[in-house]
Length: 288
Length: 314
Image 1 (cartoon, rainbow over the protein chains, first blue to last red):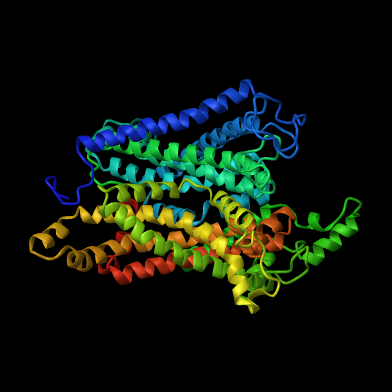
Image 2: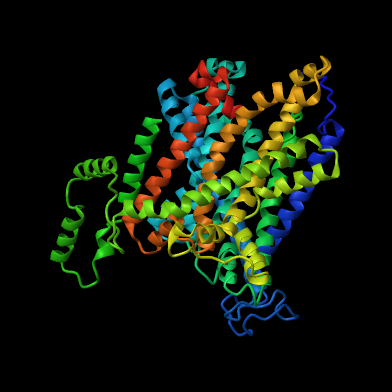
């Protein structure tokens, strides 16, 4: 790639590209911020108790029930903001699991000798090729359907990608002169990992982590939709959609709103990831 | 490939043994120790773990995956029967998604300055963000409940004896998967195209006076197809998993239905069988994708590790 490429089919770059990057960042942060805010609010206050069935059944939206009620008379708006809290929990929880596990495995592979590295890498290749949802179903079958199972399963599935990237960055950093200098001055392996490798992982890992946040929310929604997520009344959006499917002709709103919130969350996370990518990597010229 | 297959099969065996003792699914609360022993003997779980493992591997080679706890039918027969739904669903959806994705992704990149190029880009951004089952629900609402032109779910009892009825039953599920898979794939096609349009060799070809279409065909296609093939292999596996979920939206009696019902009823042989089958399928698809990539790109043939590194940096 030459630095002076000028083509007829220009992709946005230079100032325009950077502007686009911060636009992505801002819009992503706003979308995700709304969901996070709703989730935080639901911890302290909800319009109704989520298990309160005193409302009429399948009512349309009005002043009391802002998004109507479900087939048991529960307030849909209440369930939606609790769903936001669950989505954020799933996203943060599984990204944390993926990051911790992935960084440990990746460091292990990056620091070890040839054959350990090869063995770990081929294991990771299988894990990456294996669809998240199938792995999640395996773990749900083992531990039973719950929010914890879903978070652990999705986090495990995501750790392989993080591990793979950590390994590459680790090997790149270990080849640098400042690491050799640190070694000569007596810094141990753990010290090098802590002082030199970990701080340099951040720019590489933050974008995939943001992408995994969105992927995790989607995967949990699928699990819940299939009845393999957290049980009601603290149901996630996937579960709400599954329940609303039966009554979609009478109460279409409850089959539409959770889906829209899901899309907003995931697009918010994806835009944030795109924006971060463009912010963190000024040399990036290719559009993704 | 064979190594990873052996590894996956072993991991599945270990994990599924951790799932808990299958004996408890067979006995009731008043079971006596004798009952438990009899059930264990019947399932063969009282034998040493290595004997069980050898038995399981032997069964795999014979295509014998055990007997379902709930229906008492052979698991492998059941899987084969259900492939009648899952295989056509996956393949037709995949073909349709490729047909959608290539022009959409290409135009989104090539005409990125026009309004429809931007619109296609925006549409493809939705791809990775929409839950597939939600698209299913929306399509059912629109086409089955409101317009009443297509069935909301189910599959003809007589299977493929009446191909028209079977295809009608698959129309909405196929559309559902193709929309989601197709827009996801379009995103990859778009970025692959953007990447190529930026390359020096294409500019050189144009500067030498080749028409744009010739330059594309001669230089861009051969270079651009290689990363797309590896994505296609992954995407085929994703489409298969999408089918597993979508079968549950449309009450189709395929593998996904068998898997979810198996998990709910704790029917371990069924769950194990479907997961094993899916794992092998995913690995085989990945392997074929790798082979195809090497056939198309001579640069990858020389070294094994070259391919690996290429994938990570891409």
